[in-house]
Image (tube, rainbow, N blue to C red; front, side):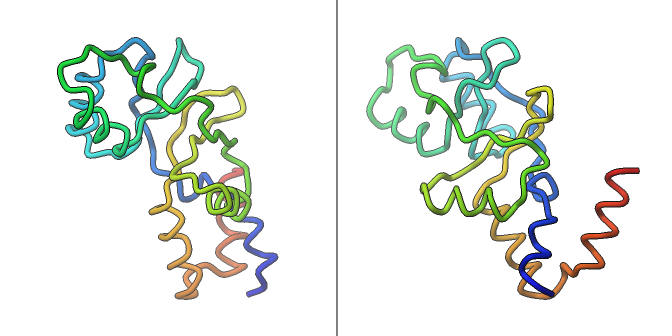
Length: 150
């Protein structure tokens, strides 16, 4: 397989679905409970339906260490301007930008700006493993493209 064939793989194919996000004014205590209950390390933050930030597990650890007892909201803790990509963005482009800029996750949205999921460094490693093992071939890519467009 040629590496140019990998440009046909979209980030959405390896994105972890995200069926929950929090509003910007949600208490950080509730955010922490949601993240722990769901077992997730990244939580998108919305203002209405617009994606305005992301909270990572690392953010939560810092809050619990340095701001215990302080009433904080998601907006107080979130990283603003998260890396947001459309579901059709090539996986190679997203992985490169995440690596180059040391970004831990990308928020994946549809063409209408609706949240679809989170693409993390673990998702990127899973994709790499499949490539290295030969589990992704040009034929696989073509079959998947046909099933997505159908």
